[in-house]
Length: 181
Image 1: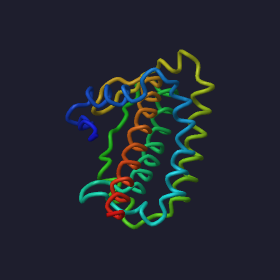
Image 2 (image 1 turned 120 degrees about the vertical axis):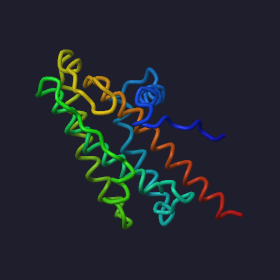
Image 3 (image 1 turned 45 degrees about the vertical axis):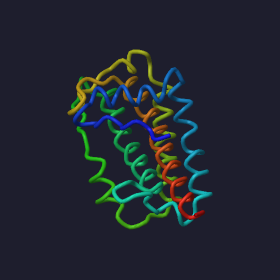
Image 4 (image 1 turned 180 degrees about the vertical axis):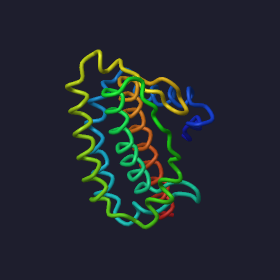
């Protein structure tokens, strides 16, 4: 089954938010985020050389999905802290395709990406665990999406994790299916 198209984060920011939140559902965002690193490790461990293969021209490889998820964790780490420490700080957007194209051109070592992701994710989960309800309600002003609380930002990343893990799995399954023919 082909997944429905994802709303454009810039062209349809509220649709994009709704999509990511729908992927999270009623699940605990900290539990979802805590399960992401082992899921990425499993994908990296079993995929070998296929990890860097794009399933179709213009689609990200599983390795590029991992790199993007790591980039998103870098950006989120800053956003979370700006929201907690500042009053309604601006939260700059970024072009995810440019980041992947310009920062991850050569196949990277997935273990390096996983180590960076693990460090950032641990720090972000610790920040979330110690944040007070008042801190979770604090808001930053996202350049494309408008006001976003720490709580909303944290839930969006959990849905984002699920989206890109699924994207990586689907891409690898497509590649594996082609190689079996």
